[in-house]
Length: 146
Ligand SMILES: [Cu+2]
Image (cartoon, helix red, strand yellow):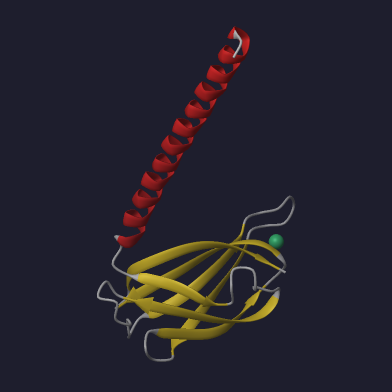
């Protein structure tokens, strides 16, 4: 091996090692970030899930909604008042749009109802859960109605 090929080979090894170390640091950092996100998400007592429509399945006009509630014990939450509020921020000359859809209990922690999404586009959706007039949980999702 000549001196210059030796140097080139060594350099290549160093570059490869640095890349491998960088990659493993990045992997562990993102794993740690995911763990933090997971423990944060697991903390609130109430699990609010928008089962229908899917975030990409919302359409302008009438939609059927289904929300499922689970408590910290994993059991369905009954006797709650569930509403979904749709807000579209003002767009140019168009004022803010807002619509509230109230859902009815269908048993087993399932709440259903139909409601109108006034137009296609991006909506900020807040699912609010109340018991005895007091909010016990809230979930925000962004959807794009087609
Ligand atoms: Cu609009």
